[in-house]
Length: 247
Ligand code: NAP
Image (tube, rainbow, N blue to C red; front, side):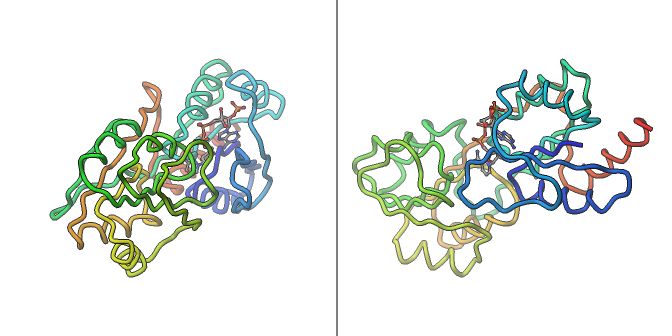
């Protein structure tokens, strides 16, 4: 079984599946983060070389089933997994935590991508809390009037907005800390990807309490006909069914 990882759910699945008899699990990481949190069991690190490279890896390692448990915004690897599964016949399920849902009191604007988020921010405020991770910060580089608090695990690559402060941190983040951060930096707009999950949800609660508008970047779509589960437990059930069929 191959788990395409890089998320908390992928580590959770590796943990619970490696306790199952009859499973041989390998987790795969892209190798982007400097000090990744490693899942339990065997781990391989680095790209496969596109869909064709992944297909060849599945064949060479006699993979019986594959779980794409990558981040909802890691669109390229999910598309490669779908293509490699289609060509090789290896069954695939995508493990995607549920999206965040707007609640009473929220002031959210949903946008399709990061350039649209940058355009929206320009109209919403001057002190921006940017929590989109390391990738895509360059979409905001042209905003000269705004000041940015940029939070990511590792430093972002590419062009950065001229006026910014970098905050290197890895979640989970507590509500009181998020509220303090918004107040101390006098944030008047928050930008986030719709990553979902509890680890980084507190910023949304803090923004709601403070009446701060939030620009929420929608997830890229999964391939058509994708089979999706929402938790590690559901993915484990699916893997058990695959094992039963595989003999
Ligand atoms: P991406 O754009 O979808 O993938 C770019 C390339 O990186 C892929 O084509 C693949 O290279 C390689 N790759 C990605 N995930 C891989 C994996 N689990 N194992 C082996 N190779 C992988 O991905 P990304 O947005 O750069 O994210 C990279 C990793 O960070 C993902 O595993 C994801 O789960 C994790 N992550 C991403 C985000 C985010 O916001 N995007 C947030 C948290 C964690 P080849 O084509 O050479 O195979």
